[in-house]
Structure formats: structure tokens, C-alpha cells
Amino acid sequence: MIRTKILNFLLFFLSLVFFSYLFYIQCFKHQYYEARAKRQHEKKYVLLGTRGNIYDRNGIPIATSEPCFSVFCTPRYAVRKNELVREIAGVSRKSRAQIRKLVDTREFFWIEMKVDKKRRDRYLAIDDPSIGYTNDLNRLYNMPEIFASLIGKCGMDNRGIEGLELQFNDILSGESGFAVYQKDPTGGIFPYHNHPEKEPQSGKDVYLTIDLQLQAILHRKLKDCLEKEDARTVAGLIIEPSTGRILAMVNIGRNGDHRNHVVCDEFEPGSTFKLVPLTFALQNGVKETDVIDTQDGKIRVRGHLINDYRDYGIVTVRQAIAHSSNVAMVKLSEKFDRENFFLLLRDFGFGEHTGIEFPGEVRGRLPDATKVNDVEFATLVFGQGLTVNLLQLSMAYQAIANSGVLYKPNILQEIRAGKKIIQQNRPLRIRRVVSSSMARRVTDILCAVVEEGSGAAASFNDIKIAGKTGTAQKVVDGKYSNSSIVTTFAGYFPAAAPDYLIMLMIDEPKSGYWASTIAAPVFREVAHSIYQMNSHRYAAK
Image 1 (cartoon, one colour):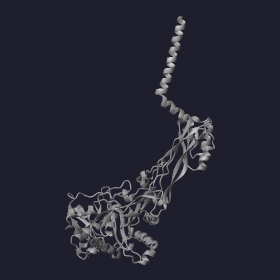
Image 2: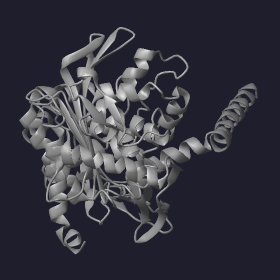
Image 3: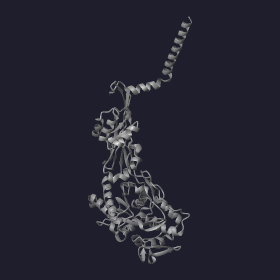
Image 4: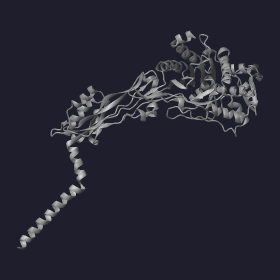
């Protein structure tokens, strides 16, 4: 009797434990075991959304994507590790020792990423369950050499990490989808009724204002200059003055330097900055024909000596700009209202970001208007003691070329989803800097630079060109260097109604010194190539 009771109690207790455990599994561990079952019986495939393309203004592809594969290894599933190492090393670009270390120390590793079908199949031919692959996308670039600093690149995860790929990453990035399949006992897969899925969404396409043909011209001429002058870097822009659209943007450095120096670097501009004090002087009653005595090409300000390249004697304002006289600019500035001068600087856009659609833009540096002393102001008017980026300097000339109206520089033309335009960028007017009549007066003086002054080497084919040279000493070890320089040239044509504005910078040329002999000839070569490309248009004029 007692035995029966004990047995019944044990049976009851075991049943209670069993059914309690079942209750626990059903109520508290249901999701866990359901997930385990799905992992054993289902296979989820990620369906990549294709990254959008980047095109030039004429629809020529610059950056596109193509399907590819990434091959991986999960060593714990390997059947024969020694043979696996040998066979992978026979296909991979890694050494056998590298493969051995990965197999012995990693639970998972990528054998090779972003390969084509032929190479993927060579890995799959190894026929080991530890080897698999995923679908991937490879980014392809048209003429990468001429676009490297502008377009940038994507990382292995297909996200933009530099340049416009980074700037427009949210627009270009597609949205991944998935499909879930049933596994059979042999490991094969097959769809089943109403299996979960999500369609991938492709990224949107970006159309730039860049003209591939102009980009190629500017790149070729700047590359020739880099080699000829043995320069550290060269950079340049081509802008449509009436809209602020960037038609070309090129940066070339050495040793794989793909930095965008146009936007991301600041420098002291030198004499190309004289555009601003010239404009201010004319606004405040100075006439082109007013004369200035350059005093044997030397002037002292509070004991600080300022020189010209040579003695220009007595010159008109027009001649002073044409020959880029520092002494004349200092004498003109002696009567400037400094507060209003700094307001004009701001109106031209100096000291502020331009708003260009590019990551990492620097804003430049202006001295404090309330603290600048006489020497600092004297050197400021010929481009020392402030820093700008090349795009800022370009847009100051854009304002004058565009009848006094400053526009926001624009590199994004439109965004499309397939053939549908979902965003179209219009030219954005920032402000009127000067009157149209004042802009014409400044342009006329800039034409004298090319016709009779330091920019003579920029002229060609009797085309009316407005331009300005700049040669600036760089600061080395806290003082201005006589050997380390930056030369610039800004010019636009035809001067009366400009189609193109070209800005060039040559940093640390070794075989020359003056912008008149370094930057101006490059302008001529770029402008002449553009002229030939559009000869039918100019012939009609």
C-alpha cells in the first residue's frame, strides 16, 4: 500500500514537472524555439537595392553599379581543413600562411569580396560546405582619374565615404529587401506559398551640373601644368557665371592625393583679391583715370616696407590693376572706410561657407575689422592676411561677371527616380553685390589686365577676356617665403556677356614664380579648347 502511494506520488510529481516544463516552453519559450525552428527550416536571402547612378549634365554616366559576389568561409563546417587551406590559397590572392591563420583563428571570414561570377565559381568548385557567397554590388567609375577628387568613392558596404558619393549617400543608397525560402532535408531551398518577402528599392539617380567634356579639358591642361611646373598641387574650376553652376572641378596632387583642394583648403589669394578693393574704390568715387604715384615701387606703412615687382612710376587706376601694383592699392586704401570695406568683403561671400554640395568646405579667415591695424589693412588689400578657398574667390568673380549678382555655387542639377524627375535645382540668387554699371566698369579694367598687363599670356583669337593674375607668398615657419608660392588666375569670356568663368591655382611651382607666366598660359589653353569646342557659337556672334 505504501509502495503504491509512493509510486503514485512519483508519477504525479514527474507528470507535474513534465507538464510544467511543457507549459514553460509553450508560454515562455515559444518565440525562442519558433526562431530556432525557422533557422533550421528557413533560409533568408538579402536582396540588395541597387545604388543610384551619378551622371553628368548631359546624361553621361560617371558612377554606376553592377552585380557581383562576395565569397566567405565558415571554418567550423570544413570537412578537411588542410585541403581547404590549400585549395583556397590556389584561387585567392592571399598566401597559404594567411589562409591557414584565418581558418585556425576565425569563425567566419571573407575570402574575397566583390568578384565576378567566373571567379566566384572557381571558389565554389572547391566543393566544401564551409564556403559560401552573398550577392553584392560593385561601384564602377567612368574616367576615374579626372573625377577622383570630386566623385569620391564607396566603402565595401556600398556606402559613400568620400566626395559626392558621401554628400549624396542618402539619395543614392538603395533599400535592401529580403526573400525567405524553405529548406529541404538535403539543404536545398524552394519557395513556399505566401513566403515572406520584401522587394528591394533602388537608390535615386543624381545628375550633376558637371560637363564631362569640360572636366576632361580642364584635367588635361592642369595635369600638363603640374608636370611642367613640378608643382605640389594644381586645381581649377569652370563656372557658368549667369547661374553659378559648376561645369568642371579638378584637383590633381602627387602620390595619390585625391583631396578636393578647391573646396577643402584655404590659402592667401594674393593679387586676385584686388578685385575687392578695386570695386570698393570705384564705388566710393575713384575713377579709372585717376592717377597714383607709386613712388619708385616702394612704400612704408608704420615702418613696414611694401614693394612692387618694379617701378611703375605714375599710373592710372586702370594701369595699376593691369600691372598689379601693390603700392598703388595701398595708396588707394588709405582713404577707405574700413568698416564698409569689410561689409563689401562679406557681400562677396568671403569668410562664409558658399553652401556648395560637398563635404568638408572650409570658410576661410578674415581679420577682425575692429582690431586690424594699419599694416595689416595695407597688406590685406593686395591679398595678404586673409585666407579663402578657391571656390569663394571664384564666386566673387562670378558676381562681377554676372552684372553684380552673386549666385550660390551649384553642382546638383536634378534627382531622378527612373525617368521621373523628383527634384530639379534652380539657380539660387544670393544677393546683388554691386550695380550692373559698376560690374561693367570693373570688367573693363580687368580686360586691361589681359590686353596690356600681367595677364597678356591669357589672350587668344581676339576674344575679349576679363582676368586677373595672383602670385602669393606662402607662410613657412611663421614668415612669408620667397620660394614657396601659390599662383592663381581668374578670367571670364566673352567679357561683355560671359559664358565661362575659369579659375586656376598652381600650388608651389618649382620652375617658375609669377602667375603671369604660369597660371595665365594655362587659362589660355583651357579657354581656347572651350572656344574650339563651341566655335560655331562664337562664329555666329
